[in-house]
Image (tube, rainbow, N blue to C red; front, side, top):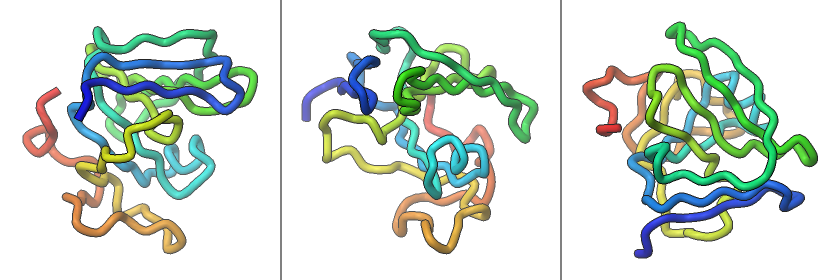
Length: 143
């Protein structure tokens, strides 16, 4: 498997690349992720911020979470594609959206969070570690 990955928005105005593989690939079924993705969940790839490069201008939207942290969601201002997010509790990490990967079909989800909020029309992937809400820090991959 090669190291790193890249992605682009629908119109191609924004691209990203990572020089590192994801620490974790997490599908989140919370209402905010559903609404920001336009589907039943979104899948984030956690990578060190130092490994992430963004090309093109992005807009962003800040929203607080259940835990009181702030999530900033970055998106293409032209086509609206979600690009990546940051979380105030994980300052050295970025979370690119897997939905705009250009390649890397061998990447697989490592866990599902907020499974208790999954919809019947987009259920949690079977066979991955699943958490009803956000898991305790001790169950999270080292980030």
